[in-house]
Length: 430
Image (cartoon, rainbow, N blue to C red; front, side, top):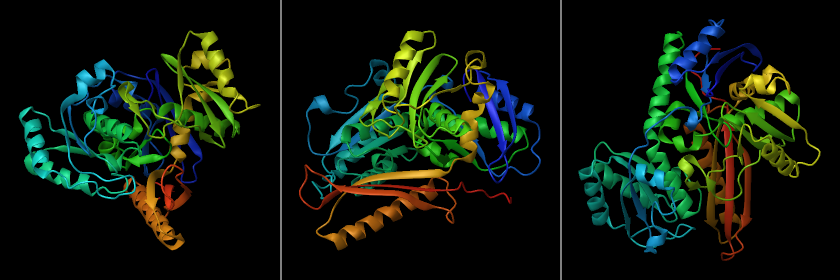
């Protein structure tokens, strides 16, 4: 669902396109989807699943105010929550915040016992301030989530209607970027709830009762319930989906992709069929610095032709000799380049995508046997997350597993990354 157009693609069980339709987008996502579904017409049989691709910028929204709890040793105020945020984002989101004793090292060794009284006092202060969205971030949480879970229990006791976002479920290893992502996740809860409700209303009006999934920024799909709990991972999936779809359409595993939208042009690269990701922290939703593995996208104003050519040339250096592919929803712009089928690239990709989950951990092992045991645990964790994200248990498998010693830490400390994926779960017979 783009600002200018909404594209719908219908595929069969083998992933072959058997219908597609395009409609002008409306201010509301529900109307946009109803229009496109009406143009598509009734499907020939039961719909097994519906996948939605929708950016955060698709429509205006009001972020929630968030109470942020950091569990870690003392730090300088210049490193506190909300520091470095854009002014507008901070004004809209920043609620009460507190740092309390507790947390762990990057390898999971306890640093201090959680200050339960300070945590309860913080929860009470937030409730008095009328804030019910909480972000909890503990040092070392990816390796040892216990302190966050303990704090979440205390907050729930004091604020029964609390909406909790925990950093070990969301962000990267770095404390500040992980904390930023967790706060954003809490702030975006209302947007995600409304988007899911809009889509379900539109589908019901079209007589469709099927599992609902959403495309995530870094690739793959997640269930609607998972999206509502973790919206920060799916705020800008349109261009990545369009780039992957354009890669398949043109048979180009390596490419520079130019996604022409209603208000801007977004440029990114594809290597081996996957979009190239940010290697370092970047400005995510609301301009806040995060590290969530999203594709590296350069956005340029639509009329800035010279700047677009410069960006394309720079990206082309990453994939020498690769073609430049045009995609997107502005037919009058790109028809002269690649034809109107590019309007369906994002939808076609999403219709065939899998459900994915990826974890990144730091582990400490005394020898090979212990390392193997920890790698097995990481595999199991990634598999369970993929299932939680919407993958059918019978189809889920580990796609990639990498581990390497961390040079700046003692011997035996490894960085482990695991990706698991499976076909979306459907409860409608094929």
